[in-house]
Amino acid sequence: MPRLVILANRVPNPNERGTPRAGGLAVALEDVLTPGTVWLGWSGERAEATSTTPKIIEHAGITYAAIDLGEADYRAFYLGFSNGSLWPLLHLMPGLTTYNRGDYAGYRAVNRAFAEVLAALLAPDDFVWIHDYQMLTAAAELRAMGIQNRIGFFLHIPFAPPEILKILPPAKELLAALLACDVIGFQTETDRAEFLACIRAMLGIAPTTDGIVTLDGHTTQTVVTPIGIDAENFSRLAGRAVRRAETKRMMESLAGRALMIGVDRLDYTKGLPARFEAFSRFLATYPQHRRKLSFLQIAAPSRNEVGHYQDLRNELDHRTGAINGAYSDFDWTPLRYMTRTVSRTAIAGLYHMARIGLVTPLRDGMNLVAKEYVAAQSAADPGVLILSSFAGAAHALTEALVVNPFDVDAVAEAIHQALTMPDDERIARHAALAAKVQASTAAAYCTSFMSFLAPGAEGF
Ligand code: GDG
Image: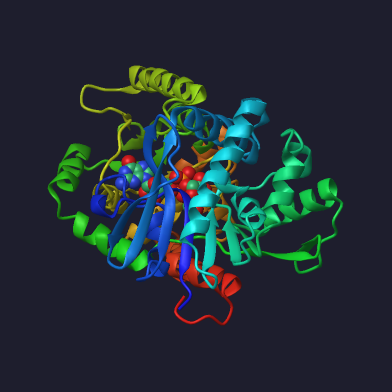
């Protein structure tokens, strides 16, 4: 019986399920996590040297295999090339992109180490599904070791056009390495088109009209399989969360005021400084709404050791002080800003009570917060989603108030529009959004990707 073998930067610890960090990829992949599946990744631990003997945990028939990263590899692979070079560049932020050859060598070495561990776990008819920008060269390493299995890769973040990608010195090498895969999946048609444009411009290969690329006799199919959430489950979670003590505390503290919510990792791609600026502009431009709306921004700390993330945190601390200093009243704080991770249930409850979900990344692969916000609303009295046109989610969620996050006046205007939207329009927009979120689920994502990776195979 062929198995699915997943390779991702992080491997979930099945013993830690339900903690605030749980979620993310483990939730999205739940439908393919059937008995027999193997999941390999980094344990999140650092050691003197990168281990090639994985720590194995068996849980519910699934094998979780985790390796520790050596300190130098962690710096080069994780902080350096993955999050200092690839993350900003693929989010079209060349000004924040750094590059050094040592980091790239470390990135390749860690991808090789993962490939070695994976090859040892692999049976000849297994399918391999590799995830995200930290693992761009793993498939090529597997092929170099003689692995013939079908290999799929899914990119969770956007892809860049050739003129941007070229900034990375090893760009061609990365593109060629990716073509070792049989299937490459993207969040949107735009991302796939950018990838194919890079293949054309930088490798001189002409893809077929249906996105198939051939290099040295090996063909790679490019596909679009947008990620989603388990909408039904999330709706139920939101319904239950309403009865929890923390939700009630929040409700009482609002004293009848409307709530606007933002939930993001503390990451510069999420557009938080511009969002705070837009909120400030909104308070200045629409004084009639002052004291009637509270904005809660939850910003879960992320990648603290990368310099730009520390700068971002300082900037947001400063802006929060400026907004609250200018507009607070004895009994009203306009902006509540929390830099810690909150439980998933609490988040679901907060979404549910929020009149506005403010999701304004400068660039985002998909953005699951937008989908979660929609799923958490009550159909009879739903809130309004304000969504950046630069989030992958905006390709489908067109009934949101779609804004350009760089245009702070437009975002301020959208907040006003959301607060004054007639009930029938609010309900109609939400119904259309909810239907899409319920159709494009996490399960649909898995089924769709597996139909390309393992066509005709049973049980995936
Ligand atoms: C990458 C791509 C793509 C956030 N704060 C807390 C918390 N969260 C949860 C949210 C949501 C998830 O984290 C964030 O997902 P996003 O999709 O919004 O963004 P990234 O983390 O950047 O994810 C992105 C995604 O991969 C999937 O392909 O959509 O474009 O960048 O689920 O609810 N969860 C908890 N506490 C928090 O404080 N429990």
